[in-house]
Image 1 (cartoon, rainbow, N blue to C red):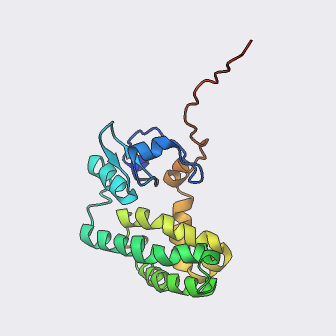
Image 2: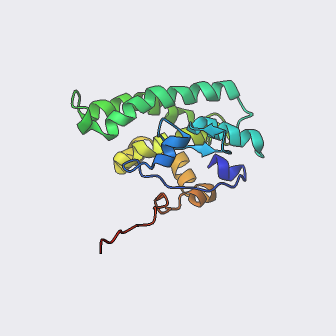
Length: 194
């Protein structure tokens, strides 16, 4: 969303994490996505860093300009602490130490505070879209998609914010499904013994 908002053209390659091509590891040894290859020498392989890079180049509505330090601190909290519990909530069968409701309650400690923020604002920190809205949206979306009906009933303020985004022109413009990237195959060589 930040790249589209910043009007930065990129070539997208959809990577299946179950079938990561060697080209991915060649540009980013971590083998994670997203990865932004700026040229043959510069690679940015963290979502937030890609967003900040894009906004540095073009930020027409000043997403990053408002309360920058507060935004970055809140994003770090969600990126580290909330994501830890979110992964356990989404994949609770991989973490049998506790049940799914335990993990959902841990996530709720973050989302309940976020829900209150929307009592006074249209967006997380103000009535203006900021970087934090775009950075946290994917986490909220992942959480909501585990049990959308429960989410919609439990977080009415977040639901309005969330619904506004997922129906926005910007969101819809970047949510196209792309064919999975397949490395170029070497031609098949058949030797015949005659």
